[in-house]
Length: 241
Image (tube, rainbow, N blue to C red; front, top):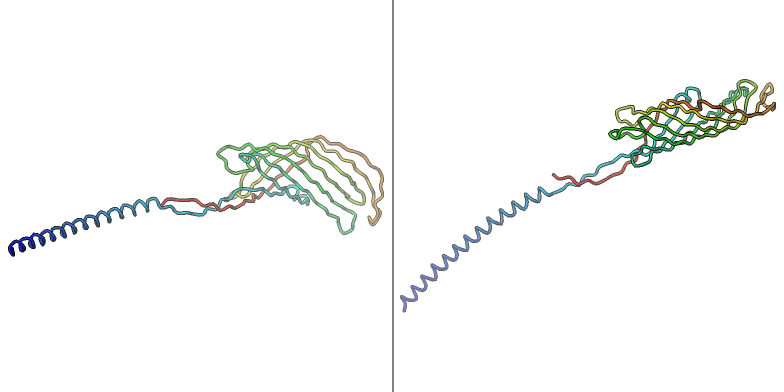
């Protein structure tokens, strides 16, 4: 009986140790597989990890320019041009000319107020991403008022213009924010004028006569410097490591 108990005890001990050994082996294998799975998971996670970066995108909004030829003639002016369309090949233009000079003696005046409204079509290569560049053609309509007095006598009146224009624009500078434009327009100009003579001190203007005048030919010429104003928009972009 005791021998049987001892045998049973021995068998139980052996079985227990074998089971423990098998359990240790199983645990070791499971741990190793778990480590391998974690390593693979981390590798995949790192490969799929994305980084969100914020980019600042600059888009051209409009161009602001001045006609240097008019400026040299002491005739300040400013123009605003807005590009539109699918490829920004079209534009609308507002051009304001505003010299308003009278000398101290009050016997000479150079006063002109003129507003031009125009539309342009640019012809540039598809590979050229710079808006408001290349050859262009357009229509130009204008109207204004003037008082031109060379010396004790002058002309006052209102005028209107209509014409077609053509020119070429190109970028200047490394950042390509600047443009130079060379252009000319031909068409019609009509005016209703009043001729006057001033007294010795030009405190009074004496009306003499009035008339109308029509002109067919060049109505505008210019070499302009234009600066492109951009809008800035922040956009998130996902980039893989």
